[in-house]
Length: 399
Image 1 (cartoon, rainbow, N blue to C red):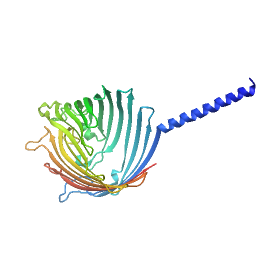
Image 2: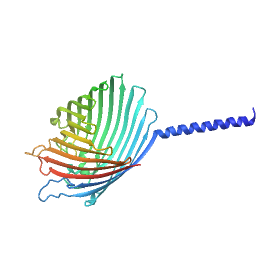
Image 3: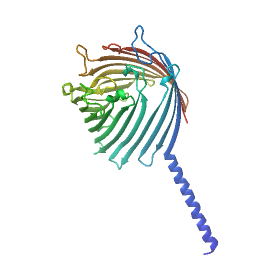
């Protein structure tokens, strides 16, 4: 064989390697996607500090400008799917400029699969946000950092049965030393099994165990408040599609909460949630959500709160680029506490909300939202009732 023939073969092999390498690189590039985005928002708030409407009350009206930049990265090698989102926000107040601040959100997720039977989710989240003034008596600024770590695994026994096991850890840490007693660490374990019959729906049983601890709360400094608790919830969970235009999702069960050292305020009652959605026509969709839950209170001297409510929404698609949504909500919040002065009643709040939002998508990467909302809280505690009107104009630009 001549030297020229040998050289030609090497060149052909080299060219083939380059082509295959470029093809492989292009395939990997198609699996990885980075999407930066930015939003600008103007907020009008006629009761910034959520004070009660009364003579002499310091009811502040303000206009807030919010600038946000974010980045979403998605990587999908094979059956795996990874997503990382970062968001930074800057708040500028026209009048109360002492409240100007920055916030951030970080969210990382890995949806994994192993073979045909195993799948799950690994997630980590962190968020820094300003504490809402509806739970504060003063006008001082404070912040909370919330963190979440979650691992979920699902095993499909066959096409009809599956089991799910998840564990998570959440923490809430505030910046105000006076509110350190409300910092909270929670660990949760959830075990569930489901019977599935596509496309009609699925039915399952679930057990959730939640351990909570207030790391900076002591029995001596905070008499009458729990320093830790354990909560059990047993539920029947379901998803049902009675027709091609409606769906029903929810869970109904019993929750028991055992607290230390205030065992006299333990709780046991029915809890759950139901979510019904129906398409009235090709353009109109309605939904109703009802729920009763228990949550650890934030900046309110109570061991926990029971929160019962109902929410309805109607969404109308006017055109391909324009749609409207009307939402109405009613909630009853009851605070369970041993921290009561003689003759004082436990706090009860009734909350009403209504919001109308218009969505407009003039371009593929440009979205516009305009909304107006009204909220009212009626409380049996003096100074805790308020009314507020909030309107927002939001522009979102994707790249």
